[in-house]
Length: 464
Image (cartoon, rainbow, N blue to C red; front, side):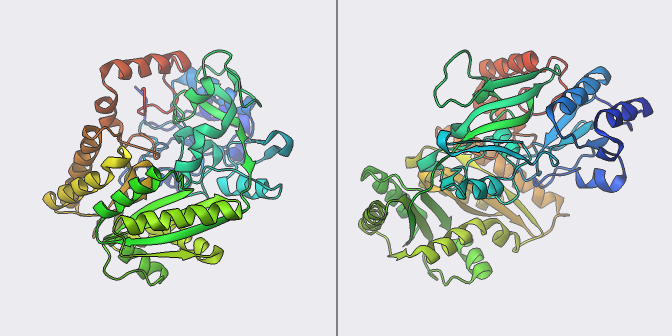
């Protein structure tokens, strides 16, 4: 559908007129930098990189792209793990790197208005100065942008108690594939006038519109936090502890798990002195008032012991921060074990967590690949991670890809899904119809056509 040739002089002239000469880049070094995101094995050159700074400029870029039938790939920091910002069909990568303003922070309304290039960490810091916090907490929060988080409906470590990105998006301004600028939702926590287009745009991975501003909800910062660590002989026992914690009426702010391979990698990386022989560990925690946190931690500790934990440790604030930091470093820790690391995600109902991990281990064994698994135990979201010794070993890569195909199908068979928080992108598009079925897949395409009739917004993803 789209050409991979260099952009014409006429197109480049129009783009430079729209955003300024210095904000249209076609030099090879820049194109190389934007030819990949954080997803391994996907590499595709755009024909230009354009950096607008407001909605009107974006609308003009969309108009130009529509006239010349050029793909537009919206991009935040490129930290996604599903090739959502890979220019598979060439075209224009539209980066929101210049759109980094926090336009408003309104404590009385518990909300903020931000441009899409604001990082999650920057918003969290600004909210914290007013005694507030932004609950979505993706692992890449220091670099990931609010626009990217919304486009993929990012999750994170606090998902069980606080929900995910879509639960905090009150309103959006976006440019559609027609060049129209629409404002959905607004400043209200309750508004059911019309279809919920805000929710529809959230998670649409730039295929329906390009986000130019977001109004997001904030919450009062909890008074304190606490964290504990429980060790188990195996992940099946840890899974029973997770069910027991929930059954006792505790809704943790944090409930994470690591298998033995992850524990070894993290300990070698962070030198925490983790249990040397346990088969799995649970990192659990809560936040709120002092008494509430103490009570929650005590109940979770007892639930773990009653479920067969080898040992349970409760840490103070400093220990909590170091443990959470260690959990966040799981991916870089695993990455040290080989030259290519493929991190995926899949979700299953919480009671099927241990069964899913057992299936992952069996699949890895049959395909002769090393897969370590960690994730969000509280919401059944697993991150199976394959580490390969060489990025040049095409046969091993093919085995890993076949293994992940089986993992996704196993998740579906257990009542789960192919992605809990990373998104579909180009990486998981081959499995999307299997997850959704033909009727829903066809509906996605009709919705895509209504928002983007020319099909120029991030083609090759979701409803494309």
